[in-house]
Image 1 (tube, one colour):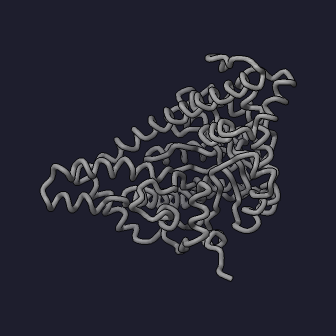
Image 2: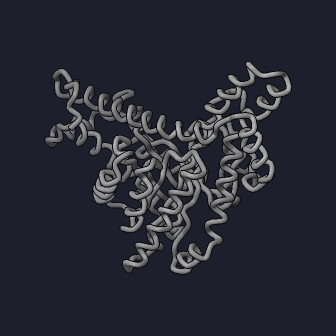
Length: 386
């Protein structure tokens, strides 16, 4: 029997998480199978995932009807009634993993409203409310890595929550949230809290960078001389991976500092880098490109079901994350020399990401409102998101 490449990722020090959630996989044994057979050790969700789950088909109709009968008529209450129960179910499926690994893994992530991305206090309040509502030690609250996110992360880690920082694209943004995580642990320690119980990941988005940079490459190459066009095209599909490799080098530098070692001695676990947006969007590239290229210890890769299936079928496992770091530096240097504005692209991707998730949140609420209207036998309200 051929060895499962997904299980080999665990041996390489990388955790594999599922970027998907639906009540069906909780109830039909599919998630339990992924845990047992593929070594999946965590799960991420986002507004887009919930919108598709609730809006497509009638799988959630019975639960919405039950919530309506229980007097839950507000859209936000219907959504949270579903989302919180699904996340609780996911946390429960991963609880054995969480216990076996001493809290090192076994998490399910639930996102605060992306509409709070620029509101530090609002983010903190919603994160604390969701943390209390889900009431599971292996919950991770997702907080966008926008400017308002860093101070929120510091406060939440300082109160002992587990935080998944999402929508990270640039190196400076990563360093900012890494600093916030460390400062939060220091505050938790100073207050007499147990730093060993607060865990975090920094979700570094990958394929979206190449999608944006490759577009810039094609535009510049179209108006360049042959030699320059060749140099530009040689960078297609390489910048995002190079960027991620350098981020990992920064992580290694951080955990080697005396400041971090003092926390580690007190029982703290490092904020691991999590590779997100690892599904390949350009059909010219391998469907497992962003998984195979970023394998290394103390990292997480969250993948959609399609990418999980592809890697199980034909993925190759090697310690690629630390291979040719000098080459990664050269790629980023060449990109800069050719006028590719990586900093500008990554800043724009954060803004776009927040807008996309906010739209998904609106679409999600619209889907819930539509279901509410149909199940209540009346026309659905158009604007009642409260």
